[in-house]
Amino acid sequence: MNAVIRAITRVAVFQHGCRVIGIEQGFDGLIFNRHQELTTVGTREILALGGTILGTTNKGNPFSYREFDENGDIQERDYSRQALDNYNRLELDCLFVVGGDGTLQIAYKLFEMGIPVIGIPKTIDNDLEGTDYTFGFQTATQVACDALDRLHTTGRSHQRVMILEVMGRDAGWIALESGIAGRAHIILIPEIPYQLDKVLEKIKLRQEGGSPYSIIVVAEGAKEVGHDEITLKTASTRLQGVQQYGGVGNYLAEQISGKIDLEVRCTVLGHTQRGGTPNCFDRVLGTRLGVHAVHAALAGKFGHMVALKTPDITLVPLKDLAGVVRKIPLTSQLIQCAEETRISLGR
Ligand code: F6P
Image 1 (cartoon, rainbow, N blue to C red):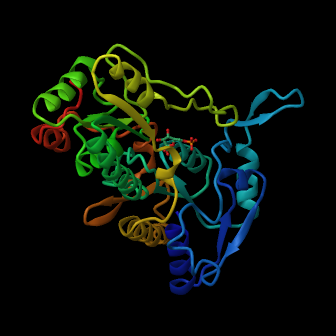
Image 2 (image 1 turned 90 degrees about the vertical axis):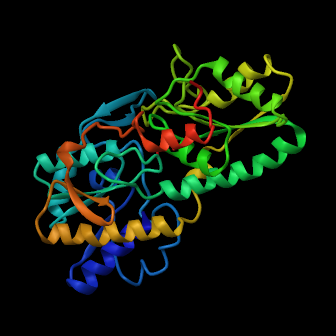
């Protein structure tokens, strides 16, 4: 996200003599009027920094803002008018909104209320329609792949089943790509509910073939045939209002361990996937999207999202994206590639 902030600031200031205002803490900053001027000097060193210098929040949906009342209960309130008034008071010409499907849906609603919006796609899950890749995904996938490389060591030398749980609520892009790169033997994704007997069959086949260890990657949103996703009871989600997934790795470990004569261990990668230094691809993609977002604004293409359509950055109407999650198509060559190289997808 910092790559986007830096690119927008540099192009807008150096090329077009504009002023750039950074809204702090996502939509919260628009609702409660918190912002700062962004300068080329102030954004000079941020390209390699993960996260965002402006901060972000999950609770700041201006149309249904979740906050505690005096009794400590959660109430939802519509702050969209207040957000619009604050936007108008700042006398801005355009609002760049960086986010995933939920954030871009809100962006479209603000556009419909009269705010000239340009959307910029962002999520590590890579599950946004209209763009080949979202930035953050490649970095997260590399973290997962590195973890798999390390898990091979213990798996092989201790002859164990090693399970890695990665993020991916509704789409298994991180699991599938990191699993292929990280030489996983079994990859379980939300798009293909798994059959336990198929998972066990693969582990046993490997044992019989002289490889008494297996590496499994499981996306947090993966589920067994006939069952629901597993949610994390310990997470506090009251403000965000979205149930957290998590636990499928340990659930699977329990399922497997009673049925085979190998030790089973589970590692949950969690938020380590979403932190740290963005890799080269993500820095370049963020920079390109930021540059083209300014071009789009100058051309008056409001209500659109900048998107990667390799090799170009193009524009996609925000209205076409509302509520659409890009799952891995079951006919995808990536799935075919995994299965033809003898990775089991649990089916
Ligand atoms: O950005 C999407 C995502 O990474 C999902 O894969 C995951 O379920 C979620 O974020 C975790 O969100 P939080 O940071 O709120 O726990």
